[in-house]
Image (cartoon, rainbow, N blue to C red):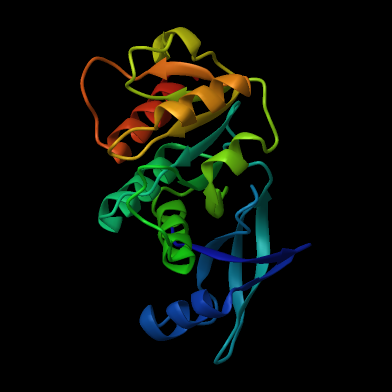
Length: 232
């Protein structure tokens, strides 16, 4: 299956400009080719290419599936990006392949990175969606300071993963339930500070442990993604 991103309108679709160039110039696609297209919001459609020009490829759709393989839960991971962005990009790719709905980059006390190339990250997410044949593109949010994020849009199941044994924590296996929505905070290599953990607890976050072993930031985040995927 060849999957592309595009805009879907009724029984027709048009690939994005970048995807159109990839189809026509890199893959040397032709009129009459059968391909699949997604809008990133749950629609997966199959169509026949009926128009090609320098900046757009249009399709006549012959099959449309809404809410394609929609998962029965939602996961939002807020993560402090690592200094080595390759490791963060690995997380973005694998989390998308497994299943994640939203990613927010956190600027915390021990953060090693102060800026994010969102355009590059977006391309990684799109590539992972196409590679894993999904129809939902995760939402991605730019860096936000920890205190600001903690007070934004509280949810029922919100957790902060940290290594400070001086605070009460639950094992992640105790809190994961099927068909539930979760917000999980993952700290930087130096962990969240004591003040940050206290602030999170004051705003109805529950502390969790991801196990006895010390995990890298991206590994800890993937552990949470795997766990929620497993129980569902």
